[in-house]
Image 1 (cartoon, helix red, strand yellow):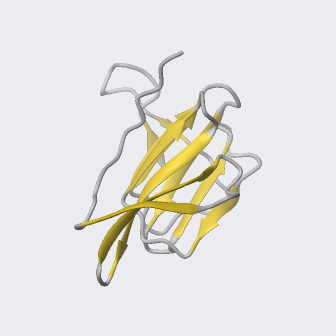
Image 2: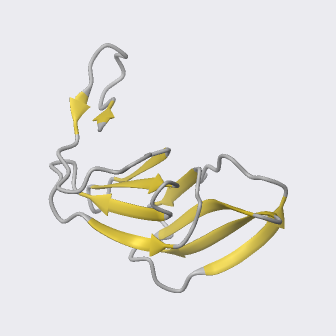
Length: 117
């Protein structure tokens, strides 16, 4: 998986993962814990790992997500989830606990967290 880790588009670094995502779609970063999050609609998961690829684990299962947002201040993860009847915006802690549906909507694709200290 290639991630641009600086402002120059020509510079990319690899994220060495033990289990390579089948179809990574969205990516987010937690600067507090130095963790990279990504959604994989093909596997119906949201996972995380360090930028070095260590401590990789799935934290959300059973979602077809094309957008994620890391709230590194509130310590929550938001994502869009596409279902056969439309879609939802959902939230859980950055550990994947306390999953909750926040809003039903048409097919949501992207989401962003406006993190302010």
